[in-house]
Image 1 (spheres, rainbow, N blue to C red):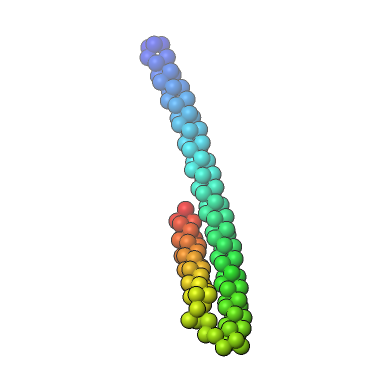
Image 2 (image 1 turned 180 degrees about the horizontal axis):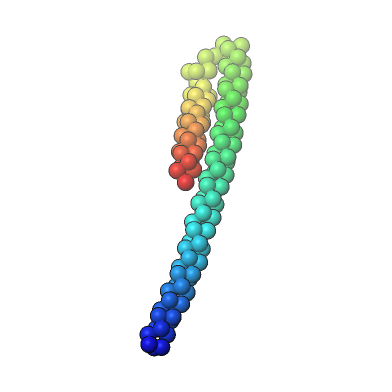
Length: 120
């Protein structure tokens, strides 16, 4: 009888010990998951901010190119030259288009990053 009670006592204490260890491991896993999720979301928000800043810089560059083109076009007109038929005019247009494509790409990247951050 004593042996049976001793076995039950050992079995019960072993189960309680294992339950406590499993609970601790579960809490640690939950903390790791939540911390990783928070850190990932923070990184996504930071990436989004950087892309927004890059987009603003590119939009500023577009305005500068447009202003320079307008000045060059006025000067060329004063000299009796159609700048659109020159290499400089072609370069202005090509550069403007390329930067404009970068702006569009930056907008798409910001949207993509935000969507990813919302899934986290």
